[in-house]
Amino acid sequence: MDAFLAAHRHLIEIATFYGAIAVMALWESLVPFRPSVAPRLGRWFDNLLLTCCNAFLIGPLLLLLGWAVLIDRLADGFGLFHRLALPYAAVLILSILALDLVGYGMHLANHFFPPFWRYHRVHHADRDVDVSTGLRFHPFEAATTALTQGAAIALLGVPPGAVIAFGALATPVLMLQHGNVTLPPSLDRLLRLVIPTPDYHRIHHSAWQPETDSNFGATFSVWDYLFRTYRQAPRQDARTMTIGLAEFNDARYQNILRLLWLPFIGKAPRT
Image (cartoon, rainbow, N blue to C red; front, side, top):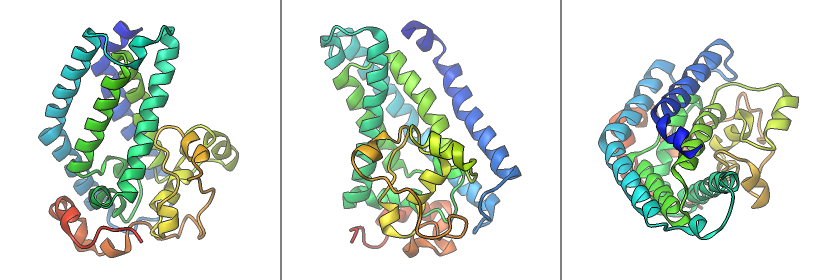
């Protein structure tokens, strides 16, 4: 399986990334859950342009370094999973769970470590939540996330196939949870036991800090239940609750240049 996933890596990445965006964009265009606060076309332009900055400025370098380190470490038999005599299926499952737990921990750090919160504010300053919000991350955040995940991959000895499988799972879930859509209540209750649903994650984008600091799960929701960061519902109606950050609610903060400069504006500590 490792060889198959590695051989089809580019196809899997393209299909899961662009496929998930296309499906969610169509869904939320046809049946939007909330009315937009900001003009959708302008938001999408800035959010996608920010994504392009990440992809073209730091993406290739981090990808090159990450894969070089990974291949080198695997060749040396370095990493925890190389020390354990486990079946490949077990390594695959444990790798996916471990990488998601690292992502959960990094998300907590982005909220409670002031220097990290500075750049994570770019994601939360979006005044609406839709699939484009799932692409809206400052280059500093993209870099620290990639380096943290790369370190985890090397230290754990995660096989390349597991890295690809994790990305193929994490990307569609990331797009789904940011979608401006809703699911039937019975389906939502079932799915949120495993993954963050749109109604689950939308609470995390509330402008009220106790809600902002909840529901951190990225691919799996188990960590929120386990570490007691889960919030079932917002205090206000989800259709009308305020999304974003009060200090950056003005439209002048929403253009690409301001988004890139946002980490250096104002105070960072959470209170």
